[in-house]
Amino acid sequence: MGRQSLNTEEVRQMLMHVADGMIASESLLTDADRAIGDGDHGVGIERGFRAARERVAEDRFENLAGVFLAVGTALVGSMGGASGAVFGTFFRSGGKALGVATEWDSAGLAAFLEAGLDGVMQRGGAKPGDKTMIDALEPAAARARALSGEALDVALASSVEAAQEGKEKTRNMIATTGKARALGERSLGHPDPGALSMTLILRFMQDYVNA
Amino acid sequence: MSAAKKILNDPRNAAAEMLDGLVAAYDGEARKVGSGSIVMNGLLEGKPALLVGGGSGHEPIYHGLAGRNLADGAACGDIFAAPPPGVILDATRAVHRGKGVLYLYGNYAGDVMNFDMAAELAAEEGIEVRTVLIWDDISSAPPERKKDRRGVAGLLMIVKIAGAAAASVDTLDELERIATKARDQTRSLGVAMKAGSIPATGKPTFELPDDELEIGMGVHGEPGVERAKMMTADELVPKMLDRMFADDLPLGDGDEVVFFVNSFGATTMTELLVVNGTARKILAERGIRVHDSVLGPIVTCQEMAGFSLSFTKLDDELKRYWDMPCSSLGYSKM
Image 1 (cartoon, chains in turn red, brown):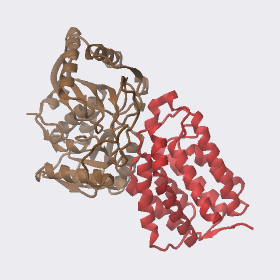
Image 2 (tube, rainbow over the protein chains, first blue to last red; image 1 turned 90 degrees about the vertical axis):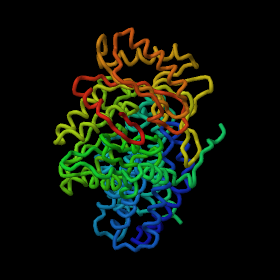
Image 3 (cartoon, one colour; image 1 turned 90 degrees about the horizontal axis):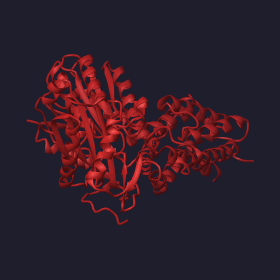
Image 4 (spheres, one colour; image 1 turned 30 degrees about the horizontal axis):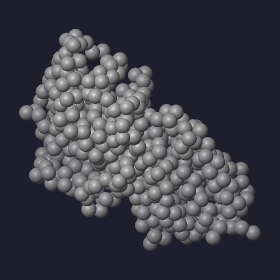
């Protein structure tokens, strides 16, 4: 029997684990972005998740929305760049959808990912197929919705797989937004760094849930 | 490739330390606002405000264009990253004098998202904000998709003209109109020869073989439109100008322009002057009159080697604002 859900304190710890993982992924993300953008994505993600980690390290939160919003606000406030707006909006919009809930289960995962996706699409104007983080997030949200009756660990593991597949598909997409847009067909073959970050965030969540 | 040699303290704190040094260089004429902005002191009352901004690492722009008859303030992000909404909002409050604020910055997804978020927050406080995006780079999209073009070196003329207008006009409508006109009359095209590096990682922003150059590469090293073997100024400059003349801004006999030859950082004034000599002959052959020339490293990308050509086509109104004196760290005019 796997994990059915996490309480607010466990979600806080999970997000600390995600922050540690993202900070450690700086070099990987920098290299991915150098192939296709201006090479600043890794540094931005590291700066953002350091701020997020600091923000949630000492605090205690009343509910799930509180802790996700704190992470999103820290990302928006510290990162700047497209990534700050996009990933900050993802955590903030997703968090808001959880209302006053204090237990994060698979239905909560689906609600979080779907609302996060809506927020990001409204903010950036990108849509699936544009070679952005949305191409990892959108299939992950759909998978989570399909499995929203399962245990959290089952739904999350499958969502990570969907995100990973979506990220790999961005290799065959031509960038139409962001600094990679000017590459046109030369963006083919490289995965989108934002889709890679989105996949990593979910994978680090999964690590914590499985631990 | 060996790592870049840079004189810094903590490379991850380079943007913040740069800003402190920048504010100090204004000798009391400007101040630091919030964690990431520079704002001029003693702004004229009753005027619409001009706020520029963007990622750091391209000094002296954008923050070095805060000045007299230039931008009232600038919101600075980290190296190559748009400033966060909170930084932009702090600057917005500081430059607002009851007549609203014009955001004027380069058309990059990150800048647009963060400035838009700041504009929404400012509106909640009752500060009217308008936005004019700079999209002068002809290599990043065809003319019919202007909104997909990046903002590059031509920002100098656009900010200069908008700054003069901001000090002169009384309404945000007028400022927006003039900034939009200056933007629509400006075109740029760059060429890259060697990458700059990100201070925090020491890694180059792109790879380019030693014997090649790339036309149309962006100031962040975004890949361009044509890669070729190294060539002479007399071979390269006509190629670039032909692309610029083929764009949708008609330029011909008797037209007047401001002509700007910009270094991305490592390309020397010697080279810029050689390029300028070649370019001026071609402009003269077409009957295009250069009203004013600007040469130098103003829109840079660390130690990137390369340069760009920009022009703004003047009419009487734009010429009047261009001719006003201005002073700042990045550009001054008597």
